[in-house]
Length: 149
Image 1 (tube, one colour):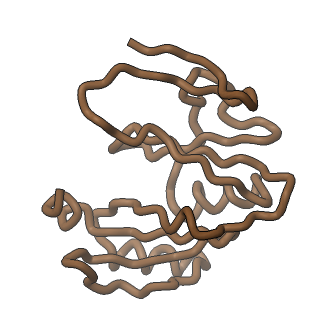
Image 2: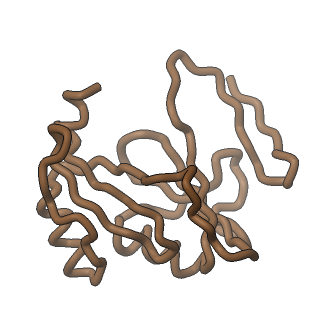
């Protein structure tokens, strides 16, 4: 069961009945939609997909992305007409990977600056990068992460 609507600003939202709680999507404002889309697709391996409500996947002001496998969580990038202020509310995005060291090496080869070299923190193998807008992204070992759930 699902119900498609739009939020007060006209962005599509979808309400689904589900058995357990899950994050369906995350929307990040960006200064440069094209550059951010390139970062998340070419550097982090995400794919541009149709929007969650069946809407346009890439428009003048928005782009929907997700990984080809794994959770059905969308990342929505939205062009911002005002400067991005990270503030204190959003801290970081976490992405699971099968091999933290290999992921860090591949990202570095693609020109991504590694902000946190591969290490073990809180019992997790982890590495960190920062996107063009300053958002922190941590890649964690999926098997370590699953052990903690």
